[in-house]
Amino acid sequence: KIPYRVEKINMRCYGDKPASFQRLQPSGAIPVARIDGTVYNQSNDIIYTLEQLFQDGEHKAMLPAQTDTNRRMKAQALLKLERTLFSAWMYWLTGSERSRGNFINVLKEVEEELSMSDGDFFLGN
Image 1 (cartoon, rainbow, N blue to C red):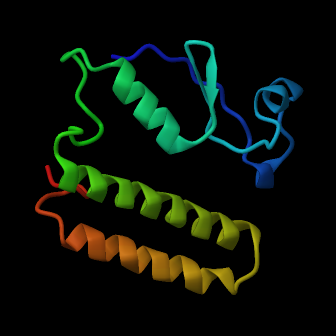
Image 2 (cartoon, rainbow, N blue to C red; image 1 turned 30 degrees about the vertical axis):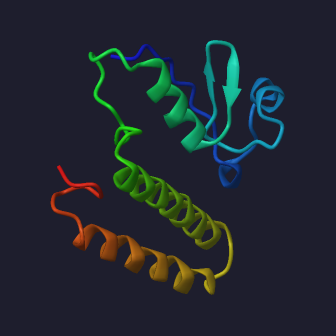
């Protein structure tokens, strides 16, 4: 296991964030991780950093090996799709009903990617 501590912070649409969080992440965006004293404020940066720090054989890799160029590029495209999905969901949640159509279109992209997988997950089992 990777040692961690969770601090729950409101999403912007649910209320104000504590001043201590605002100092850590002035934009107020989540997620945020402090790893060995460095603050990371993007999901992918957090994933890549953890992947680098915990390559000890005890921890299952979250990403394909760097030597597997094709799967690594596919993983990067899927991580981008995840960010697109989150953004579309957030715009629909906090915006107008018009955003619903975009969210549904992104969900269709997600379904298409999953249907091309040879397992239960985007990159297979």
